[in-house]
Length: 404
Image (cartoon, rainbow, N blue to C red; front, side):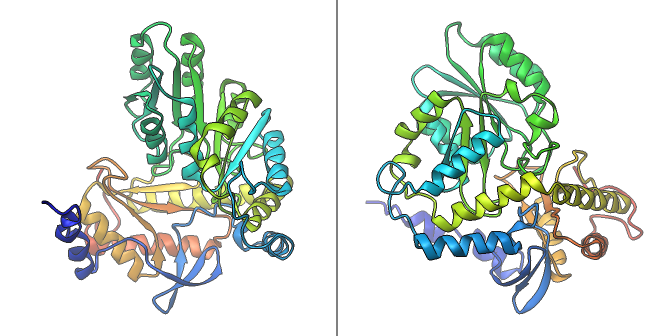
């Protein structure tokens, strides 16, 4: 009888790349000096891969809130939200998020991934989900778990989305699912067109705002606020592990919808609740998001400085004004070699390869944060110049363009 573990023993790809020094995954961080500087392998390097966009994980107020919660409530809730795991802190966070996002209600869950999976409670039978090709894996998994019919439209292709809506059988429930800011390439969805199409065809719209909440919009409510289209979005998802410097996620929308998810979603019913420290940290970070816009202003300046410097070197570095700065390489091995050269030069980035992106769209992903100094931003750009010339991604004088 075949052994289900045989494929594990036969899989050698990771060992090959480790032996070649080109394995880009999970370098172990030994110490954190700041959100923009960490120690790895005994040396201090610039962190340019973290999603701590506002740099609040090191804010003394956020850290003190987490410590106080541990002191008064312990390290774990030791139960699911529907059992014994709900503390008044969870309810306070949900009320604050609902008010912040201008929604009737919110539900906080243990991770961002689980939060998206919770949407599966809404899906099933003959219902149809229209999903952007570049959506996060957790959104695609939610559709599979729920059992709805998934139809994928080409990335940000509104004519394809329109065709799928028109091709859906009348009387079928439809949920359009997309991201406010796409996690890998940092581009924004075409929200004006999506909301117009959703209204025309009677579809509901869910927007994953994991990478734009706290950063975009005058108050930090993300792409919907930035574009003045908050009323056109039916269900908002966000995470706490990015701008809110914690761990967890939330869904916000109509009270009846949130209450239904609270009682029927597996991540709410069968998973332990967010720890008190995580809830308290997210609450304090939300206080800062609401009262100190200078952090948003700083991260956007840093992102613009990064993009400008990389373009001057000849790289394709994205166009969207978001903290995610993608450096397109377009070749699997070149991407790994560039990542290695940057790491050796003291810059920790993310190598994004298939299946995280489509083949031919390999990239180095950088996250600008409010914690980066001007000197660190300039050093990141300088390292891209050195590394790019070393591996042949850019010319000897920085001329030319990285591959698409």
